[in-house]
Amino acid sequence: MRAAGLIFSNIHDASIPELTSRRTMASIPFGGRYRLIDFALSNMVNSGITKVGVITHYNYQSLLDHIGNGKDWDLARRNGGIKILPPFITAYDNAVASKVYSTRLEALMGVMNFINHCEEEVLVLSDCDVICNVDLSAAIDAHEKRDADITLISAKVNTAAQDLDRKAQVLSYDAEGKLTDLAVYEDQQGDVEICSDIMIVRRSYLQRMLNEAMARGYTSFYKDIVYRNLGKDRFFVVHYDGFFARVNSIESYFRCSMRLLDRDSRVNLFYRRNQPIYTKVRNSAPTRYLPTAKVKNSLIADGCVIEGTVENSVLFRGVRVGKGTVIRNSVLMQDTYTGENVKLGCVITDKDVVIKDNRELCGHESLPFYIGKGMTV
Image 1 (cartoon, helix red, strand yellow):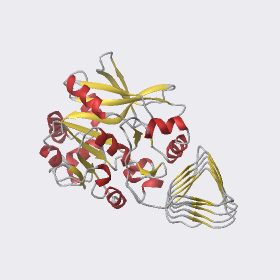
Image 2: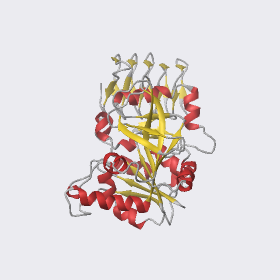
Image 3: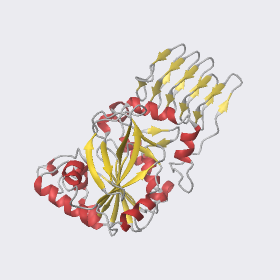
């Protein structure tokens, strides 16, 4: 294959500490049966990429369990396939390499061995906090046709519907797609064109920039590589106009989950032609709906038992909803158990949560009530 992939699994963990205290950003559950890394992996596999490196930091046991040998993404291969790249802090004898990475550029320095041994001249870099279904093969074609050094995948978002943090990069480009400006988001209102943190890079160019970064002590990919060389090197933009969401807080995670209840959003994300989203296959029984069950506008995975009322909610595998229980506008992760006569509103439960009988918990759309993994209420 002409391209290889690199996925950053931990870059944005600090943005959502509630869900990343025991896992990586990449392994955050989403949409009833997926993990966030599924979108980055599927985007690459659907584009014909068969060699993918996943850069890890810490807390990656659940990530290893989810990925396994990569067979669910057709990446269990003799040549290429998926490779877990743990932190390697002694790769180079300088100030940056003397600590575990905290930025995208530092992470790339730690996996220089993988980059140097890639036979592919094109690398696709992707973060895991982005939820989208993008045709990377078309973007790679444009990258090669333009003889670009870096091609950024951009998306247009409305600030009223989606919160942006200071890490978001607002960009501008001309009619030919050439990048003309790049700046940190500063409370602009309305529609904003931002970088999706998915990019295509010429491998030889990346090697040269990483060597320069190590020599000069650079730490920021956008500020020290892209912005510093803007106008001198060949930087281009490819616009993506499908479903796009970024998880940068517990509130944005809740809002992204609720967007899946809209049929058009689901179709745009999961049912694009020849672009399925793959995930780890678990063989479980269908969900049981007992005579007392009432379900409205909800996304419910396999293996659940529903006796109560579920409205406008996302339920993962193995959730139990007791008799007389009412769940509205909530996200219940795998194996959550709710007893009888429970009332939940705007609640996020992590895995293996137990909520006993007659409990009432309520949050708000702007501040959902979160219950940590394995807790009993």
